[in-house]
Structures are given as structure tokens and as C-alpha cells.
Length: 440
Image (cartoon, one colour):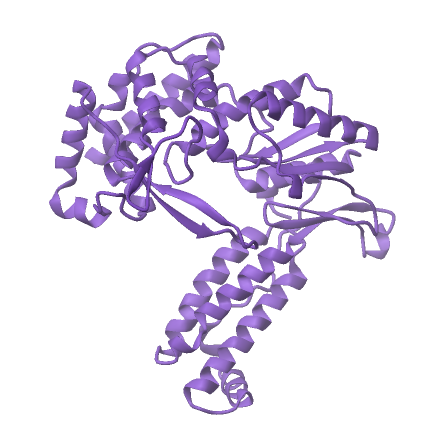
């Protein structure tokens, strides 16, 4: 009950801040730092960090270490340090992870657990204030917004005749955001000097790579709890300038964006306006992913948020006159799914019980299908299930040192197929001007 009461108090704080910011768009908030080190706010921040787990920072302290040595002790220490002004964030640990569907590697910065808690507490306080300002074109990393809301916007705008699309993403967005510009954007709403100093300290903490700490004048490193919010705060300037550009409808999910336009002339204007706005912000579009696409029957499509989008004609004889924007998992999304299925049925799992392998397969398939079911994905779902079926049969055959057909026969002879799930009947096709959550 005590924990529930704390959560309710934090939510009430956020509602109060949101209402105040919404009621007065010109208001600048003075007294916020004391709310960051409130014990209930830090407690909620810890729960968010613990839920996301994550690796250790440069101090090698893990979530489990904190739980063994005492969560209350850590939170009390952080509250004292923040209140006394002695808190100093550590440099984040820099690692590079493979970028899906590319040979590139994405830099990831891993703050220490204690710093993640402070970042989460700062985000709890700051987010409702800036949420009051964010525009409907922004969908990424926002409460009660999702990728599917952005995808629905594409369906709706294409149905309204905006079939010329500018697609791009911002080059190295999280690493390129200038600190001075970001702090200026924050200061439009926040004038609490202690809180501003706290955020500035987070930005300047730097990263440790190969044993050396480096600090830059730009970047809100990916991996930080507060980084998505800070990126949205800065990119809100793009959204505001777009309102006066008269260049189509913008749909932005963090640093991925499209502009939906009614004709080629408007699309050319949108692309020029986009480049100009990004340049004014010290950013630039990624050239390899920047192009104009005309959505037309038989034409090319575009990839956005894991889906491939294409203008198609209805196959139903009653509605052959109807064309619409269909979507299904992109080629890269399909390849990543096949690779994951292959990993889960690899030879190093031959000693595992088949039921355990199937349990892991089902966990992945449910999560993957949970995202891609909101599309025209029947063919792709069948392909992934057939791939999982073949890989499982091959694993069974290898385990018993038999030919592939043996595994297939053994799998087919079991009525439960070892519990391997089916994705039949799970598809929810998108419809124009109909909220995606309502289903069919």
C-alpha cells in the first residue's frame, strides 16, 4: 500500500506540472530541483530503472548489487547528494552495438545505475512540462504515444491524397545535438538554476572508451534514461518551424521522419524546408536515407518504423476501385526475424529440451507478431512460422543424428507440435481514419 501511495503522489505531481504548463504556455518554472530529490520521486525512478535492468556503468555496479547492498541506502545517499549539491555524475561507459540491417555500429552510452536513477527522477519532473508543448506530429518516446500511432498517421494522410512522401532520418541525431542549443530549448520553460546545472552536468559527464574519458560540446548519448526526452525537447524546434513551412504533413518518430505531400512540387519544397530547418539546428539529414517517393499503384514504396508501405488496390471484387496504403514487415525486419529464429534453434542448443527451445521461440514470435500484427502481414507471418517450423524440425533431427525429414515427421506426428504457436488469425489490417487500437 505504501508503494502504491508513493506512485499516486508522483502521478499527482506530474499531473499538476502538466496542467500548469498547459494552462500557461509562457510560464517558466522556478522551483523544481527539490522535487527531483523527493524520496517518492527517487523511489519511482528506481522502479523504472530496475524494470529496464540494463548493464553496469564504469563503476561495475549492477542492479543486483544495489539490491544486495540496499536500495533505500542508495536512494538516501542520492537524495542527500542532490539536496546538498554534491552529486556528480560519472562518465558513461561507451560500447558499440550492431545496427540492425546494416554493417554500421551504433554507439551506446551506459550510465552507472545511480546516474540512471537520477536521470529518471529528472525525467519524471521535466517530462510533463514539455509534454504540454509537444505537437501532434511527434510520436517517439512519449507517454501514451506509440509507433503505431505514427503508422496510422501515414495511412490517414495517404488516404487524404498525400501520396508524395519525403522520407529521411537525422544523421547521428543523438550525438549531434548541440549542448548550447539544447540548454536554450530547456530554458524556454525551466529557470531553476539548480535543475539546469544538474542537466548540464549530465550532458558534460562524457563517456569512457578504451579507458579514457572524453567530453564533447554536442550529444545527448543514446542509452541515457533522459536522452529521449532531451532529444524531443530539441527537435520540438523542428516541429514548430515546420508549422510555418507550408510543406505537407510531418510525421516524426524521434529522429525518423516523413513528410506527406499532395504533389511533387510540394514534396520538393518540403525537402528543401527540411534541410534548411535541420541546418539551422546544427543537424542534417542522412543522405543515404533521404529521397522522395510517389505512392502509386505498381510503384515503389518506403520503409518506416520496421514496415514496408506500398500503395495497392483492393483484391476484393466488390472494392476493386479502392486503393489504399498497405504495410507489412520490411525486408530488413524479416531478415532480422529469420536470424533470431536461427539463433534460437542453433546447434549449441541440441542438448536443450525441445520444449524449452519452443518456449523461447514462442516468446520471440509473440513479441514480434505483437508489433507487426497491425498491418497486412499475413504472407510474412506464414513465412516466419514456416521458417520456425523448418528450423525446429532440423534441430530435432540433429539432436537424434537423423536426416531432416525425420525431424519433420516427428514434429508433424505430435498434435501439439511441441507447443509451437500459430500466428493465424492475429492480423489486424489498418483502416483509414480509424484508430488502430479499435481493431477490425
